[in-house]
Image (tube, rainbow, N blue to C red; front, side, top):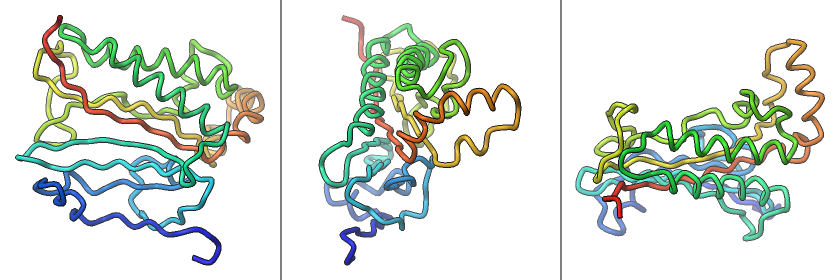
Length: 221
């Protein structure tokens, strides 16, 4: 396009078959700029503009088993300071989750480790005012993990203790949706919260980051 942007359309399974995969595991989820703050963004028709982030949630299917991986990267190859701050929180979360993923632990242990990291990060950025509250859910509204197998969201009891051979996702994310504060219920508590986080919100508005890896539980060393 003449304005230096381009349109990104990624809906074909062809890219999955190039390396001998059977098909895609699910239709790719690709969002750029503010579209990256929408979970399961499906249009994949927005402009990809230098200075934006692109979030790509993709997974191939091989021998009937699905992968599920998300990466977020800057269109022009360089994070802005604000983008980097959000990205680093998610990166620390991913590492914190991996440390507790071992035989005998549960998905809830992984989620708890992730939540502690994200609360610390959001509080430091000014996007929440109380660590021991549910405020962080404004910016992170989905679970940290799900079982992975023949279905991308596979069946299983999330209270089950991890055993070697189990596979699940580790997907921390932060989504500063442009309309997030507008959609909060009109209560005195929310009004106070909005006033307090407004400066940080304006700084990080429109940034969406998710890092998703597929985790295999191996025997304890």
